Amino acid sequence: MGKIELLAPAGDLEKLKIAIDYGADAVYFGGEMFGLRSGAKNFTIEDIRDGVDYTHKYGRKIYMAINIFAHNEDIHLLEDYLLSLKGIPIDAFIVSDPGIYLSIKAKLPEAEIHLSTQANTTNYKAAEFWHSQGIKRIVLARELSLDEITELRVNTSPQLEIEAFVQGAMCISYSGRCLMSNIMTDRDANRGECSHPCRWQYHLVEEKRPGEYFPIFEDERGSYVFNSKDLCMLEFIPELINAGLTSAKIEGRMKSVFYVATVVGAYRKAIDSYYQNPESYRFDQNLLTELKKVSHRNFTTGFYFNKPSNEDQNYQTSSYTREYDFLGIVKSYDDENRLATIEQRNRIFVGDQIEIIGPYTDYFDQTVEMMLNPEGEHIDSAPHAQQIIQIKMNKPVKENFMLRKLHVKEVHNEQ
Image (cartoon, rainbow, N blue to C red; front, side, top):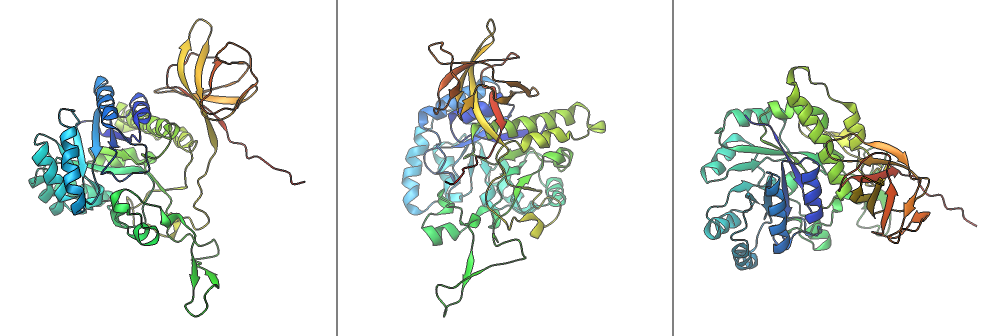
């Protein structure tokens, strides 16, 4: 078998390019319609062309998610939309609805099709059924253990590819097929508009005592009863590979470019390290430390080793842990005077202690000793969103390197 594929989310064209630059073997994205992440910026037809060109330029692959559960009203629009994609060499389409599958086969007969996790494939017989219908790859349900994945791999055709999520948010409902958002906010999670009510805090109200709210306690820690920790399998790369996975998938099309760069970079290093010497591979704990420098919830291994318990839920809060601030992204670098041109994403001050990360390299730290505005004038701070500045660097950097600093909570004194 070949090397396991590292598959990264691309919520927009910038994130796609970052994912490729930081080591993704493939990316997946959604168009402006028919995907399950309508809250992401997503891709226009022109974006899709540019994204495919950029991905293929580096010998990587690009997959398009058209994975809503379609209603009758969607079908005609979908088929027109598919015709607008004709001639764009997208490597595969990710679907969950058999009707959408049939539409793609009719309008784009040469297209490769992958089956979404939304189809909740949990056994090898189901996998073989879909493969017999022409599905090239199955994205397995998140509810499978490593032992079940191994058994499924052994009992299916070697030509069938198997993909599974290894990093990101966990849905409380079976394989993401949730009705809570639809019922509570009239936003259909199965058509890309989830309002994430599983992250809300709940109380109990007794019918004959309206207005009296009783907290729902599983124990003394709180009442976020649906709030799962985030999946993280970074420490278990050998187990994922030995189970027979073709592709390791990162969730997060609505995450930031900083998230994409950091998570892809950590998994890239872990996977490459394993393949360099599988027999003596030892996980580098620094990679997990690096992963935690992006906004995240506490981590769980989901269903991979056992069924999740109360230890895999967070009853205290649905908030993210944020240890570092993303400061900016390098747009260009002048070797002669060691000045990096940076697009600011958070406030930067002269005197800040910062860290600089880049693809396939370890981070380094330095103090911001000098900043210039576009006119070449010295400035003490860069407070404006997407402000263009220049910073003198201690070491060479390249386009798409990123700056971060330790997050400091602001304290406001009440008068």
